[in-house]
Amino acid sequence: MAKQQKFILPDSTNKLSLGNRINVKNATYTLLRKKQVCWIKHSFSPKNEKARRNEFNKFIRSGGEVKNCNDLSSEDLAGIYQQLFKLRFAGRVRCYEFDNLMTIFSEFRNMLFGHILYINGKPCAYDLMLKSESAGDVYFDVPNGGLDTNYLHLSIGSVLMWLNIRSARELCSSLNKKMTISIGVFEPQWEYKKRWATVSYVGKVIC
Image (cartoon, rainbow, N blue to C red; front, side):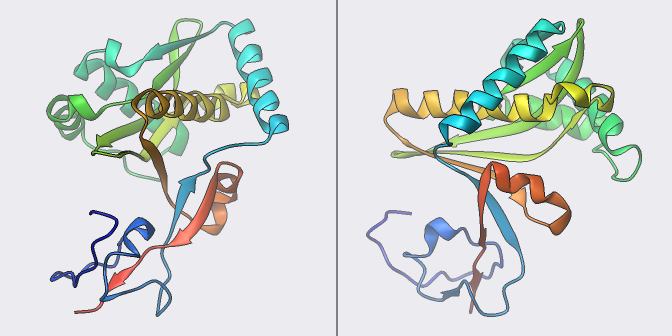
């Protein structure tokens, strides 16, 4: 939506982005709002960046390796996602069916972004990250992912998040476009997300 445009949205939704607050005249971001979304910060403190670099270096010294998701086939990505998702959630959350994952990784191939972490030659962390580009913005969405809990001592979740954010920042800088990254909804049990993100309510369209 063009930033200068203001209009009434002729459709109902309760998940309107904060970025459209200035556009949509028939929306509320305060009345009966519960759902909150996490938006990655545009910069981090020098102390935070140093801590992430130290985690990354420790991971590499321990046999770690980083691959780009675009270097793998759709079938490999689907298998890795399922494997790591199940290791992370251990049956508490149902994973997507393999065929559905194959559809995502095949049909939306041009939207895939980010890295996969390996330890001693085996995948250990992968977040599904999708990219969408407009004239002045690049939007990234991280709906979910998985990791091997045997390697939590190597901060693999943190290392992966940092690498993906850094790559997204570099891409947006090279394109001279604004970066927006969502890492999903916020719940009290996901307090760790606040290390990376600011939290805001999504809007509701009043028809």
